[in-house]
Length: 151
Image (tube, rainbow, N blue to C red; front, side, top):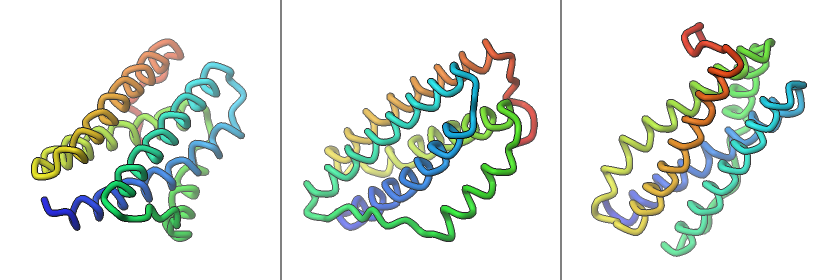
């Protein structure tokens, strides 16, 4: 993968995580369950760290990380999130996002073999995301929320 491809991938990563951050913060405002709210807070912290690390790598590559996110994409994600009325639906929605995030890492980390520094950054973030997904699934078990209901 070329330098330009690494930059494009990291830029896409930052943008997607910024959009996700908006949704997670909205969910945190609307939930009452302290366990769920705490899990959201930790997920928000992980998302902020991922943005910071990817942005730092972009700067190392000589690029400025753009923090501009598409209003259209953010609105679409917020609309999707707003249709999740119950805490269980919100938990499932975030879970599906974490699962999709892991699939993204599985696909793109392999594509970065020509850029070992960016690859190492994403490998570390993938491990952090894997742990967050594991903790999220533990919370789902404790709260008796099945991931199987349609999201």
